[in-house]
Image 1 (cartoon, rainbow, N blue to C red):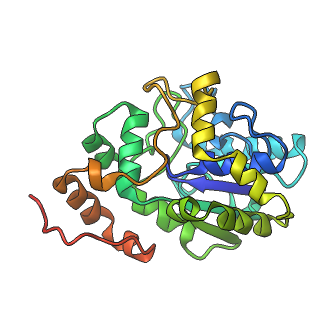
Image 2: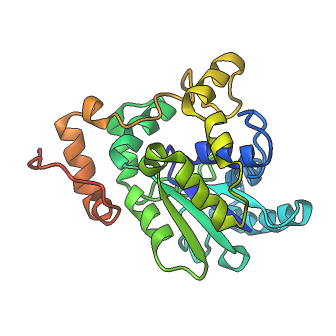
Length: 265
């Protein structure tokens, strides 16, 4: 089993459309090749189940999925790759490899706030909180931790290979990055240029405007917004300073340039 992993709002849906294009469909409401989300496997779990019982459901459901689908399958996840109460929501014994897409947290904050229908400051709070997604309330099933926790858990040394992609590199040269994905999966790169053209962000956005997108949050009008970096025009100096204070170490590891802002109290 392979995982397509990311912190929310980092570009995994775009990668799913590219993979689906390789399988022959660029319809955003009929994506192929990637099981939509590991959280959907246990989203119907009864609320009275304990935290540990829901965690245990994940590998059980993955085993069930693997028995039903042709192997190897790719499963999307927003889960942290770490032990939670002694259980890893990304079971290492079932994992053959992963693609991990990461995005500048200053842009993640803007997109995440839009997705949640919350102020940007609230999204920044969640991104800096190591307990985010760890309470399993109601139907919630994604366990994320802070942005830095999440990234660290996936780029550390693991017993299987992880292809790490930066969203910004995908924007700058989509064909080259998609070639890397195909090569890592052992796929032909013969049609990558054609697929990339069919999955241009403007075309995905036009699809959503015409036909809607079934995975869109009820809290906002559109899933596909700008698709580009906008933090320099949107965030206040104080917001940038908070994000860099929370995540500067990990941002530097990923070659995201920090500003020269002084700490804002």
